[in-house]
Image (cartoon, rainbow, N blue to C red):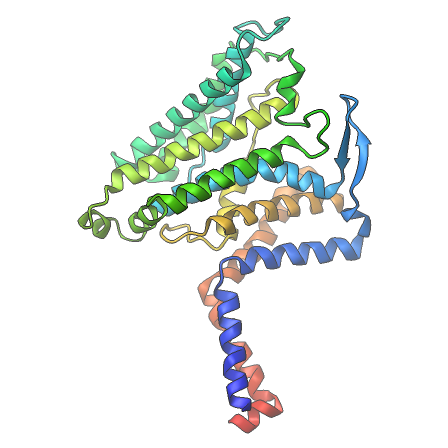
Length: 365
């Protein structure tokens, strides 16, 4: 009986740790416990009046949901790119600057201080979507057709993207005069929940439906696992890789809408700075292989909120902004190593050896 119990416990442990959601969920629990012990008020949600005179929810948890949402949107596209190409797009932050600058150009019409917006917001957003997808198509073409490594291919826009964004608006900083534009990165009057939460929910529903009712997920994983085999099975690897970058470009446009609308203007050198690193970390934290292949979209999305939870926690501990990246890197390295298959093997061996030291384990032996 004891031997059977040991086997069932070992089997349960193996299934638990092999689940891709295990590491990001464990990280969330650990961060929650740390904040609960350090300062229980971290989880307090209060109602305050914002600058627009509206009653809204406020607190660290609201901040995590708010700023984690834009990262989750980027993690959706980055997951597909990673799975299909076996590489990452490091130009995401610069592309957000380009798409956001194009959006402002349409809204302000070349005038940095217009009295009214020069085009409907939906038109400006659609232009940003086209620009974002064109940037994604450029990266996708270099990767899928010219067979350039993704990180090298996207280094072009990473280097030149912010200069292109500044050139679009003649190096000026346009300000959108319509207060409705700020709703997308803030709050809709009468609704105390950040608008970004609703935007990310819509994006999650769309990608969930796409993965459920199309073969995109299957084809992406097949190309990432073995490009040659997928070609023999009638899949076009070139198109799948290209499509993944275009989808990421669309996700970038949505993130650009959120980023630009927060302040109704843009700072080309600062906007979305280093956000591509957080998006890549979210994918890695979700247990997805950065070399491509099988992926878990839910794990990546949860990983995005873990990164934001970590960032908010570090700020709560008064970590200087300059040192923030170093602290995040240390914690994320530990989590990523902990999620590695080799680390899981060691944990399983440790659990087995620990059971042998128990009375029940000695009897079974």
